[in-house]
Length: 204
Image 1 (cartoon, rainbow, N blue to C red):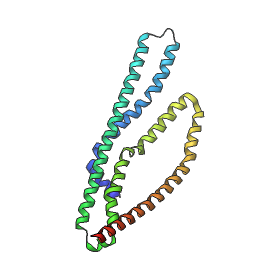
Image 2: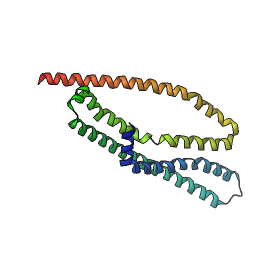
Image 3: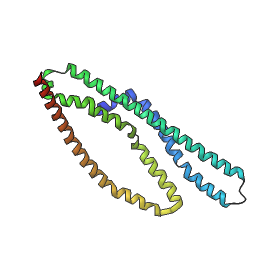
């Protein structure tokens, strides 16, 4: 798995990294809105505040929302495009390998396993691509949220952190359970394809 990850990173890592920069801009702009909204409320409360300040805050929140929308759409476009390239590369690699695989090795692998590698597993890799950046941007979002919440609420915001920490083992257990079910499902799919091929071969 790590050798595959290194090869894919070397081939398509730069477009994927550029998508990450777009996501970074989007997440930073997401925190502009609440802060500008606070300043707008303070502006409306102050009768002596200059009108230019209100206009500037309005333009700022509008620009931030437009930037967020553009960056998010481009982020998903780049990620899905990279994911499609991942899928194509894996399918071609498995297909070429299946053509030159030794006969002894071919006997240890069913045609269902090879077909699943070219279809199900490759498609799953493609669908995973838009969410790989969550490895870093989830921590960024949590950190910035805590920073701004601490500034407004003080220690009271730590209640949300406690809930997140408490739910981590539960999420891990659920993910482990679902992963086990997925492995069983893949074995069943392999057996199904094997039986189908045997039936079709018998018909011929």
